[in-house]
Image (cartoon, one colour):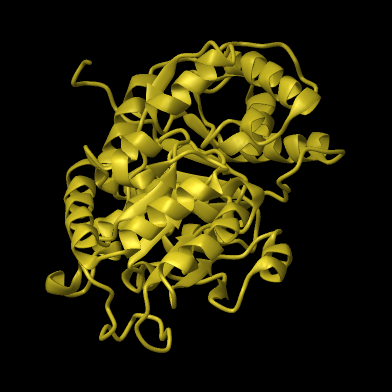
Length: 390
Protein backbone atom coordinates (compact mmCIF):
# COMPACT_ATOMS: atom_id res chain seq x y z
CA UNK A 1 0.00 0.00 0.00
CA UNK A 2 1.14 3.53 -0.69
CA UNK A 3 2.75 5.34 2.24
CA UNK A 4 0.51 8.31 1.41
CA UNK A 5 -2.62 6.47 2.53
CA UNK A 6 -4.16 8.21 5.52
CA UNK A 7 -6.86 7.45 8.04
CA UNK A 8 -10.34 8.90 7.49
CA UNK A 9 -10.75 12.06 9.60
CA UNK A 10 -13.96 10.85 11.27
CA UNK A 11 -15.05 7.31 12.17
CA UNK A 12 -18.55 6.48 13.39
CA UNK A 13 -18.97 3.21 15.28
CA UNK A 14 -22.46 1.72 15.44
CA UNK A 15 -23.01 -0.77 18.25
CA UNK A 16 -25.86 -2.80 19.66
CA UNK A 17 -25.43 -4.32 22.24
CA UNK A 18 -23.86 -1.77 24.55
CA UNK A 19 -22.45 -4.33 26.96
CA UNK A 20 -20.45 -7.56 26.99
CA UNK A 21 -17.65 -8.46 24.63
CA UNK A 22 -18.85 -6.30 21.74
CA UNK A 23 -18.82 -3.23 23.97
CA UNK A 24 -15.28 -3.98 25.16
CA UNK A 25 -14.03 -4.37 21.59
CA UNK A 26 -15.61 -1.07 20.55
CA UNK A 27 -14.29 0.74 23.62
CA UNK A 28 -10.76 -0.49 22.91
CA UNK A 29 -11.01 0.64 19.28
CA UNK A 30 -12.32 4.05 20.34
CA UNK A 31 -9.34 4.53 22.68
CA UNK A 32 -6.86 3.45 20.02
CA UNK A 33 -8.35 5.62 17.29
CA UNK A 34 -8.65 8.69 19.50
CA UNK A 35 -4.96 8.27 20.32
CA UNK A 36 -4.24 8.24 16.58
CA UNK A 37 -5.88 11.66 16.24
CA UNK A 38 -9.16 10.62 14.65
CA UNK A 39 -12.47 12.21 15.46
CA UNK A 40 -14.34 9.21 16.86
CA UNK A 41 -18.09 9.00 17.36
CA UNK A 42 -20.17 6.13 18.68
CA UNK A 43 -23.90 5.48 18.29
CA UNK A 44 -25.05 3.02 20.94
CA UNK A 45 -27.84 2.53 23.48
CA UNK A 46 -27.65 5.11 26.29
CA UNK A 47 -27.08 4.09 29.88
CA UNK A 48 -24.89 1.13 28.93
CA UNK A 49 -21.27 0.29 29.84
CA UNK A 50 -20.24 1.21 26.31
CA UNK A 51 -21.86 4.64 26.56
CA UNK A 52 -19.95 5.27 29.79
CA UNK A 53 -16.68 4.07 28.25
CA UNK A 54 -17.15 6.35 25.24
CA UNK A 55 -17.58 9.36 27.51
CA UNK A 56 -14.56 8.34 29.58
CA UNK A 57 -12.42 8.17 26.45
CA UNK A 58 -13.50 11.62 25.28
CA UNK A 59 -15.24 10.43 22.12
CA UNK A 60 -18.58 11.68 20.82
CA UNK A 61 -21.57 9.76 22.15
CA UNK A 62 -24.76 9.67 20.11
CA UNK A 63 -27.59 7.89 21.96
CA UNK A 64 -29.22 5.28 19.75
CA UNK A 65 -32.24 3.67 21.38
CA UNK A 66 -32.09 0.22 19.85
CA UNK A 67 -32.91 -3.14 21.40
CA UNK A 68 -31.29 -6.49 20.72
CA UNK A 69 -34.19 -8.23 18.93
CA UNK A 70 -35.59 -7.46 15.53
CA UNK A 71 -39.18 -6.33 15.58
CA UNK A 72 -41.59 -3.54 14.90
CA UNK A 73 -39.04 -0.93 16.01
CA UNK A 74 -36.61 -1.77 13.19
CA UNK A 75 -37.81 0.98 10.84
CA UNK A 76 -37.66 3.60 13.60
CA UNK A 77 -34.24 2.39 14.75
CA UNK A 78 -32.89 2.56 11.21
CA UNK A 79 -34.28 6.06 10.64
CA UNK A 80 -32.75 7.23 13.92
CA UNK A 81 -29.42 5.82 12.88
CA UNK A 82 -29.64 7.48 9.48
CA UNK A 83 -30.12 10.83 11.24
CA UNK A 84 -27.04 10.21 13.38
CA UNK A 85 -24.99 9.34 10.31
CA UNK A 86 -26.15 12.54 8.62
CA UNK A 87 -25.29 14.64 11.69
CA UNK A 88 -21.82 13.14 12.17
CA UNK A 89 -20.93 13.07 8.45
CA UNK A 90 -18.25 10.39 8.97
CA UNK A 91 -15.59 9.37 6.50
CA UNK A 92 -16.14 5.74 7.49
CA UNK A 93 -18.85 3.78 9.31
CA UNK A 94 -17.96 0.69 11.38
CA UNK A 95 -21.03 -1.37 12.38
CA UNK A 96 -20.68 -3.97 15.14
CA UNK A 97 -22.85 -7.07 15.60
CA UNK A 98 -26.03 -8.12 13.84
CA UNK A 99 -28.51 -5.40 14.84
CA UNK A 100 -26.22 -2.45 14.17
CA UNK A 101 -25.02 -4.26 11.06
CA UNK A 102 -28.54 -4.46 9.70
CA UNK A 103 -29.72 -0.96 10.65
CA UNK A 104 -26.40 0.63 9.69
CA UNK A 105 -26.21 -0.94 6.26
CA UNK A 106 -29.86 -0.15 5.54
CA UNK A 107 -29.28 3.46 6.59
CA UNK A 108 -26.04 4.00 4.69
CA UNK A 109 -26.37 1.58 1.73
CA UNK A 110 -22.75 1.87 0.70
CA UNK A 111 -22.75 5.64 0.21
CA UNK A 112 -19.98 5.89 2.83
CA UNK A 113 -17.13 3.38 3.19
CA UNK A 114 -18.64 0.79 5.51
CA UNK A 115 -17.09 -1.91 7.68
CA UNK A 116 -19.36 -4.60 9.10
CA UNK A 117 -18.09 -6.75 11.99
CA UNK A 118 -20.57 -9.49 12.96
CA UNK A 119 -18.88 -10.65 16.20
CA UNK A 120 -20.47 -14.11 15.52
CA UNK A 121 -23.09 -14.60 12.83
CA UNK A 122 -26.74 -13.80 13.45
CA UNK A 123 -27.93 -17.07 11.88
CA UNK A 124 -26.05 -19.11 14.51
CA UNK A 125 -28.25 -17.71 17.26
CA UNK A 126 -31.54 -18.95 15.79
CA UNK A 127 -33.02 -22.00 14.12
CA UNK A 128 -35.37 -23.02 11.34
CA UNK A 129 -36.99 -20.37 9.18
CA UNK A 130 -35.54 -17.55 11.28
CA UNK A 131 -32.02 -18.83 10.63
CA UNK A 132 -32.78 -19.15 6.91
CA UNK A 133 -34.00 -15.55 6.79
CA UNK A 134 -30.92 -14.38 8.70
CA UNK A 135 -28.64 -16.11 6.19
CA UNK A 136 -30.55 -14.50 3.32
CA UNK A 137 -30.13 -11.07 4.89
CA UNK A 138 -26.40 -11.54 5.50
CA UNK A 139 -25.93 -12.54 1.86
CA UNK A 140 -27.92 -9.54 0.65
CA UNK A 141 -26.49 -7.04 3.13
CA UNK A 142 -22.89 -7.90 2.22
CA UNK A 143 -23.26 -5.71 -0.90
CA UNK A 144 -23.37 -2.68 1.42
CA UNK A 145 -20.14 -3.45 3.26
CA UNK A 146 -16.78 -2.50 1.77
CA UNK A 147 -15.22 -4.93 4.23
CA UNK A 148 -16.69 -7.66 6.41
CA UNK A 149 -14.33 -8.06 9.34
CA UNK A 150 -14.26 -11.40 11.14
CA UNK A 151 -12.46 -11.97 14.42
CA UNK A 152 -11.27 -15.44 13.40
CA UNK A 153 -10.63 -17.43 10.26
CA UNK A 154 -13.29 -19.86 11.47
CA UNK A 155 -15.88 -17.09 11.62
CA UNK A 156 -14.99 -16.10 8.07
CA UNK A 157 -15.36 -19.71 6.89
CA UNK A 158 -18.75 -19.94 8.59
CA UNK A 159 -19.88 -16.88 6.64
CA UNK A 160 -18.57 -18.26 3.37
CA UNK A 161 -20.27 -21.61 3.97
CA UNK A 162 -23.54 -19.74 4.54
CA UNK A 163 -23.19 -18.16 1.09
CA UNK A 164 -22.03 -14.70 2.16
CA UNK A 165 -19.90 -13.21 -0.61
CA UNK A 166 -17.88 -10.33 0.76
CA UNK A 167 -14.60 -8.45 0.74
CA UNK A 168 -13.25 -10.25 3.81
CA UNK A 169 -10.73 -9.21 6.42
CA UNK A 170 -9.75 -11.13 9.54
CA UNK A 171 -8.69 -9.09 12.57
CA UNK A 172 -8.43 -11.20 15.69
CA UNK A 173 -9.64 -9.87 19.01
CA UNK A 174 -7.09 -8.53 21.45
CA UNK A 175 -7.02 -7.78 25.16
CA UNK A 176 -5.36 -5.18 27.35
CA UNK A 177 -2.49 -7.24 28.71
CA UNK A 178 -1.67 -4.78 31.51
CA UNK A 179 -5.25 -4.82 32.79
CA UNK A 180 -5.50 -8.59 33.20
CA UNK A 181 -1.97 -9.51 34.25
CA UNK A 182 -1.60 -10.34 37.93
CA UNK A 183 -0.21 -7.50 40.09
CA UNK A 184 2.76 -9.67 41.10
CA UNK A 185 4.27 -11.72 38.28
CA UNK A 186 5.37 -14.37 40.79
CA UNK A 187 1.73 -14.92 41.76
CA UNK A 188 0.31 -14.89 38.26
CA UNK A 189 0.15 -18.66 37.93
CA UNK A 190 -1.72 -19.37 41.16
CA UNK A 191 -4.94 -17.95 42.62
CA UNK A 192 -4.24 -14.64 44.31
CA UNK A 193 -5.54 -15.26 47.80
CA UNK A 194 -3.37 -12.42 49.15
CA UNK A 195 -4.27 -9.94 46.39
CA UNK A 196 -6.21 -7.04 47.93
CA UNK A 197 -8.19 -6.79 44.70
CA UNK A 198 -9.14 -10.48 44.62
CA UNK A 199 -12.69 -11.39 45.67
CA UNK A 200 -13.22 -12.93 49.08
CA UNK A 201 -14.35 -16.48 48.37
CA UNK A 202 -14.23 -17.64 51.98
CA UNK A 203 -11.09 -19.78 52.04
CA UNK A 204 -9.24 -21.86 49.50
CA UNK A 205 -11.01 -24.51 47.45
CA UNK A 206 -10.59 -25.52 43.82
CA UNK A 207 -12.34 -22.69 41.99
CA UNK A 208 -13.80 -22.65 38.50
CA UNK A 209 -14.82 -19.26 37.09
CA UNK A 210 -17.07 -18.63 34.09
CA UNK A 211 -17.26 -15.01 32.87
CA UNK A 212 -19.99 -14.12 30.40
CA UNK A 213 -23.52 -12.89 29.88
CA UNK A 214 -25.97 -15.34 31.41
CA UNK A 215 -27.68 -16.39 28.22
CA UNK A 216 -28.20 -19.35 25.88
CA UNK A 217 -25.16 -18.48 23.76
CA UNK A 218 -22.66 -18.74 26.61
CA UNK A 219 -23.82 -22.20 27.71
CA UNK A 220 -23.74 -21.84 31.50
CA UNK A 221 -26.63 -24.33 31.61
CA UNK A 222 -24.32 -26.94 30.08
CA UNK A 223 -21.71 -26.21 32.74
CA UNK A 224 -24.33 -26.64 35.48
CA UNK A 225 -25.30 -30.01 34.01
CA UNK A 226 -21.62 -31.01 34.10
CA UNK A 227 -21.06 -29.70 37.62
CA UNK A 228 -22.26 -32.76 39.63
CA UNK A 229 -19.73 -34.97 37.81
CA UNK A 230 -17.01 -32.40 38.49
CA UNK A 231 -17.91 -32.40 42.19
CA UNK A 232 -17.77 -36.20 42.27
CA UNK A 233 -14.19 -36.00 41.04
CA UNK A 234 -13.19 -32.90 43.03
CA UNK A 235 -15.26 -32.70 46.24
CA UNK A 236 -15.36 -29.20 47.67
CA UNK A 237 -14.86 -27.48 44.32
CA UNK A 238 -16.83 -24.32 43.72
CA UNK A 239 -18.10 -22.58 40.61
CA UNK A 240 -18.45 -18.82 40.18
CA UNK A 241 -20.66 -17.44 37.40
CA UNK A 242 -19.64 -13.83 36.73
CA UNK A 243 -22.16 -11.70 34.87
CA UNK A 244 -25.87 -11.15 34.49
CA UNK A 245 -28.38 -11.72 31.74
CA UNK A 246 -31.79 -13.04 30.77
CA UNK A 247 -31.16 -16.61 31.98
CA UNK A 248 -30.05 -15.67 35.50
CA UNK A 249 -33.16 -16.81 37.37
CA UNK A 250 -33.37 -20.10 35.49
CA UNK A 251 -29.69 -20.82 36.15
CA UNK A 252 -30.01 -19.91 39.84
CA UNK A 253 -32.90 -22.36 40.17
CA UNK A 254 -30.76 -25.16 38.73
CA UNK A 255 -27.59 -24.40 40.72
CA UNK A 256 -26.48 -26.20 43.92
CA UNK A 257 -24.97 -24.41 46.91
CA UNK A 258 -21.43 -24.76 45.53
CA UNK A 259 -22.27 -22.28 42.73
CA UNK A 260 -21.94 -18.54 43.35
CA UNK A 261 -23.54 -15.84 41.18
CA UNK A 262 -21.82 -12.45 41.25
CA UNK A 263 -24.17 -10.47 39.04
CA UNK A 264 -22.69 -7.78 36.83
CA UNK A 265 -19.22 -6.63 37.90
CA UNK A 266 -17.31 -3.51 36.90
CA UNK A 267 -13.99 -5.34 36.63
CA UNK A 268 -13.62 -9.02 35.75
CA UNK A 269 -9.83 -9.14 36.22
CA UNK A 270 -9.92 -9.99 39.96
CA UNK A 271 -12.22 -12.93 39.25
CA UNK A 272 -9.77 -14.38 36.75
CA UNK A 273 -7.01 -14.02 39.32
CA UNK A 274 -9.15 -15.85 41.91
CA UNK A 275 -9.65 -18.82 39.57
CA UNK A 276 -7.82 -22.10 39.33
CA UNK A 277 -9.48 -22.69 35.98
CA UNK A 278 -11.66 -20.56 33.67
CA UNK A 279 -14.38 -22.23 31.61
CA UNK A 280 -16.51 -20.86 28.75
CA UNK A 281 -18.92 -23.51 27.36
CA UNK A 282 -20.32 -21.37 24.50
CA UNK A 283 -22.68 -22.65 21.83
CA UNK A 284 -21.33 -20.20 19.26
CA UNK A 285 -18.78 -17.37 19.07
CA UNK A 286 -16.66 -15.41 16.64
CA UNK A 287 -13.70 -15.39 19.02
CA UNK A 288 -14.63 -15.01 22.67
CA UNK A 289 -12.81 -12.41 24.77
CA UNK A 290 -13.15 -14.15 28.14
CA UNK A 291 -10.67 -16.98 27.38
CA UNK A 292 -8.13 -14.44 26.07
CA UNK A 293 -8.54 -12.35 29.21
CA UNK A 294 -8.16 -15.41 31.43
CA UNK A 295 -5.02 -16.50 29.61
CA UNK A 296 -3.61 -12.98 29.92
CA UNK A 297 -4.02 -13.47 33.68
CA UNK A 298 -2.03 -16.70 33.45
CA UNK A 299 -5.02 -18.99 33.88
CA UNK A 300 -5.68 -22.18 31.90
CA UNK A 301 -9.03 -22.34 30.15
CA UNK A 302 -11.50 -24.97 29.00
CA UNK A 303 -13.56 -23.85 26.01
CA UNK A 304 -15.95 -25.42 23.53
CA UNK A 305 -14.91 -26.04 19.95
CA UNK A 306 -16.80 -23.14 18.37
CA UNK A 307 -15.53 -20.48 15.96
CA UNK A 308 -12.34 -18.86 17.17
CA UNK A 309 -11.63 -21.31 20.00
CA UNK A 310 -8.89 -23.32 18.31
CA UNK A 311 -7.27 -20.13 17.02
CA UNK A 312 -7.23 -18.58 20.48
CA UNK A 313 -5.54 -21.52 22.24
CA UNK A 314 -1.76 -21.98 22.39
CA UNK A 315 -0.28 -24.80 20.30
CA UNK A 316 -0.91 -28.16 21.94
CA UNK A 317 -3.62 -26.93 24.32
CA UNK A 318 -6.59 -28.27 22.34
CA UNK A 319 -5.95 -31.77 23.70
CA UNK A 320 -6.52 -30.58 27.27
CA UNK A 321 -8.69 -27.52 26.88
CA UNK A 322 -11.10 -28.01 23.97
CA UNK A 323 -14.39 -29.94 24.18
CA UNK A 324 -17.42 -30.30 21.91
CA UNK A 325 -20.24 -27.81 22.51
CA UNK A 326 -23.32 -29.00 24.43
CA UNK A 327 -21.50 -32.06 25.81
CA UNK A 328 -21.66 -32.00 29.64
CA UNK A 329 -19.77 -35.30 30.00
CA UNK A 330 -16.81 -34.12 27.93
CA UNK A 331 -16.82 -30.79 29.73
CA UNK A 332 -16.85 -32.48 33.14
CA UNK A 333 -13.99 -34.77 32.15
CA UNK A 334 -11.79 -31.90 30.93
CA UNK A 335 -12.48 -29.71 33.96
CA UNK A 336 -11.99 -32.63 36.34
CA UNK A 337 -8.62 -33.52 34.86
CA UNK A 338 -7.31 -29.98 35.17
CA UNK A 339 -8.62 -29.56 38.72
CA UNK A 340 -6.81 -32.75 39.67
CA UNK A 341 -3.40 -31.19 40.26
CA UNK A 342 -1.71 -27.77 40.24
CA UNK A 343 1.31 -28.53 38.08
CA UNK A 344 -0.54 -29.11 34.79
CA UNK A 345 -2.51 -25.91 35.46
CA UNK A 346 0.66 -23.96 36.18
CA UNK A 347 2.29 -25.14 32.96
CA UNK A 348 -0.79 -24.46 30.85
CA UNK A 349 -1.31 -21.07 32.51
CA UNK A 350 2.28 -19.99 31.85
CA UNK A 351 2.06 -21.05 28.20
CA UNK A 352 -1.32 -19.35 27.85
CA UNK A 353 -0.01 -16.04 29.17
CA UNK A 354 3.00 -16.11 26.86
CA UNK A 355 0.72 -16.94 23.92
CA UNK A 356 -1.60 -14.00 24.57
CA UNK A 357 1.35 -11.64 25.09
CA UNK A 358 2.77 -12.57 21.70
CA UNK A 359 -0.43 -12.87 19.68
CA UNK A 360 -3.47 -11.14 21.19
CA UNK A 361 -2.29 -7.80 22.52
CA UNK A 362 -5.07 -5.26 21.91
CA UNK A 363 -2.51 -2.89 20.36
CA UNK A 364 -2.10 -5.35 17.48
CA UNK A 365 -5.84 -5.34 16.95
CA UNK A 366 -5.97 -1.53 16.90
CA UNK A 367 -3.12 -1.31 14.42
CA UNK A 368 -4.74 -3.88 12.10
CA UNK A 369 -8.05 -2.01 12.12
CA UNK A 370 -6.26 1.30 11.45
CA UNK A 371 -4.54 -0.30 8.46
CA UNK A 372 -7.90 -1.49 7.17
CA UNK A 373 -9.31 2.03 7.52
CA UNK A 374 -6.38 3.39 5.51
CA UNK A 375 -7.24 0.99 2.71
CA UNK A 376 -10.82 2.21 2.67
CA UNK A 377 -10.21 5.94 3.17
CA UNK A 378 -9.89 6.63 -0.59
CA UNK A 379 -12.95 4.49 -1.40
CA UNK A 380 -16.02 6.30 -2.61
CA UNK A 381 -19.29 4.87 -1.43
CA UNK A 382 -21.49 3.13 -3.96
CA UNK A 383 -24.42 5.30 -5.00
CA UNK A 384 -27.85 3.86 -4.36
CA UNK A 385 -31.07 5.65 -5.07
CA UNK A 386 -33.15 4.12 -2.26
CA UNK A 387 -34.37 6.73 0.20
CA UNK A 388 -36.72 4.65 2.33
CA UNK A 389 -35.16 5.59 5.66
CA UNK A 390 -34.34 9.24 5.03
